[in-house]
Image 1 (cartoon, helix red, strand yellow):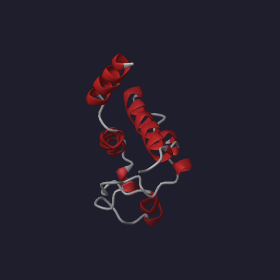
Image 2 (spheres, one colour; image 1 turned 90 degrees about the vertical axis):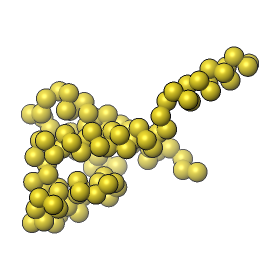
Image 3 (cartoon, helix red, strand yellow; image 1 turned 180 degrees about the vertical axis):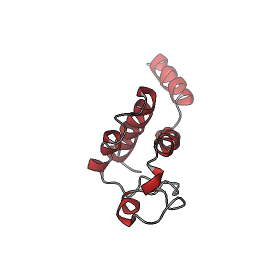
Length: 107
């Protein structure tokens, strides 16, 4: 039993907290979305002409995906069909992490 506790403690020390993993994934996804020109509609520092797009998400905001509904998160990937596989994976990882964060009970 004490071996199990020791292993659990070691894993907890090595793995970053879920919130931190999500914020790192969010920042990587933001960079991909900017590099694939999503910022043309979804970044108020680039253009404020498309208020409907900015209402969904604004890449200027620290928590840029906070207003997105759960069903909207996977739609980020539909805009990246022509993007390199590594970029698609980055956004897919973010979507998975964000969905897991939202599904986990909050303290």
